[in-house]
Image 1 (cartoon, helix red, strand yellow):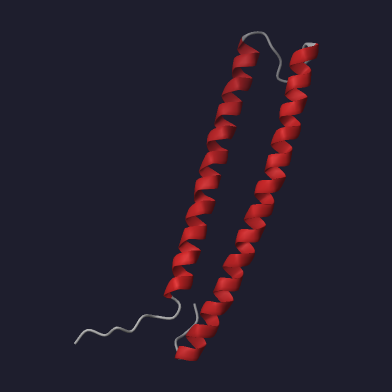
Image 2 (cartoon, one colour):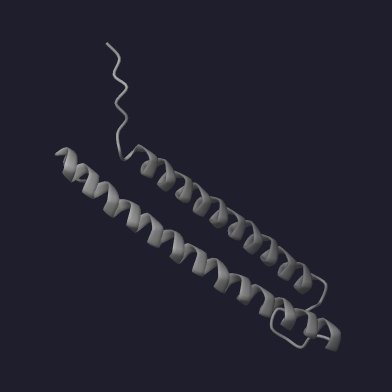
Length: 107
């Protein structure tokens, strides 16, 4: 006989899985961006540009602005990761409570 019982922690587990998938996607995007930036840097060096020397005025200003933009974006993404980890910890606590209520061992 089939039971209609649904584990009370199933919805929370699904949310955690979604959060983890989202974090994995963001990490993959950051990796792609880092690899692309490294490639651009190598291109600059190959053209006789610099990886640590003096840039032309306008080019230097663009690089500085790009650094500011990336640092701002990095800060926002780190905040999102902290928020997601907080939500994961809240869900973990809820799952522990539910498991305790059901008499199941807590992982």
